[in-house]
Image (cartoon, rainbow, N blue to C red; front, side, top):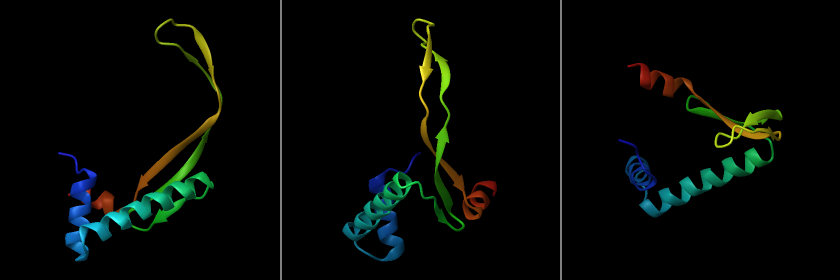
Length: 93
């Protein structure tokens, strides 16, 4: 079962002993910082948890799955998220 935002906020509030409203504000702030940093081309590294960085994708050829016609896919950006050591340890137990 996946943890949704409401459940995550509730668990953060319980662990940090803060209100759900404060936990929601903190989560929203984290989201804003991640988005702003990635838009600026900066990587975000939270030691032990994860690192998030913007990656460049080169232009390439593709196919329209409906018609089979070859199309040009322009260069763009993607997001790379790497698990930190604490996350890796958690899933290998």
